[in-house]
Image (cartoon, rainbow, N blue to C red; front, side):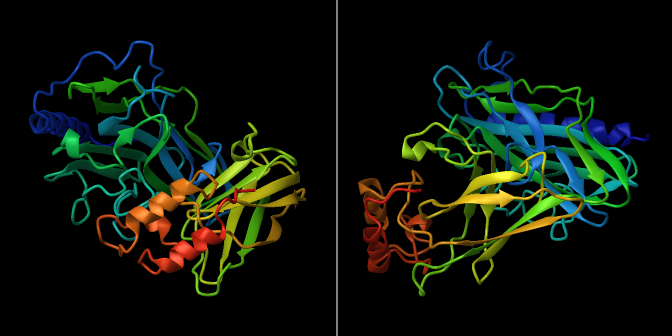
Length: 408
């Protein structure tokens, strides 16, 4: 198998070296450390998982002509260091290769023309960070150095991002590692199935790395786990999966449907943490959105992720409490795709801080932004329950209607 010319690889390494040097200048007193944050800290792992699915699904089955979204994820230890405080990330680097391009291939982003899609996507790790104008490929700017390239002949994917103008005191909120956000999505790729067969997305021998700042603003590398197993196995051919088709109802005809949804499936009778239990879902699907009629779908769910049987299905909106439908049946595939149609009851708005209860903390959050419109400093999008871009009496009315309620 051919490889990208060594000149390009050397150039990429020099980009990282130059970028790190620029960070050192940007952060007064910073210098590249030679030891990890803490000797007994578990290493960070770099995963490739099907987008928006928990637990991480790396065994993928897609039809010929079909596609699957894969997220590049930094899987973090429970605590990065002894304090457990967030640490800012200033660089990451990863190299992969997709075997057998006749079976599957990486599709370029139609908007940017790049293999890894991270720019202008609010759900990824670069949320709210300044971005480059245009389509960066090995380009340096005042804020980022980016290498984002794919060689379809060799299957080689090289992706590096380094902040070059980093201010620790004013860092963007999306650039931190902490135990509350143990998985950070650093990019997304699309795999398309071309022909019957199997392909693998493998980590190459080139090292992956993450660089962070310690408490003294010194640049410190964190070990990234190496794995001998394939990062992802992709099977292209007949698909025997389940598709969920869900229809939401509105609580108020003047409202809009939630802008972001999370769907989880639990063993029957499981008690979630917000109801005092310690159970965890069998599977979860995050960052979903509805169409204008309140409908959404979860497609291509394999039996390896969700075996046939009965489940309790829970739906939570970004501004609402969780609702549950019990004993939803996932049928045996029988050699073809199965469809499960669900009509979901109304989601109850009022949960601003995401703890699945409407209480005084939510009232205080709404009060802090009361009277604010979209674009103003104290505007909190999750307090805008009817999504009319202003926090006002209409939003307070919706919160008070559900005050004291808890998610199901």
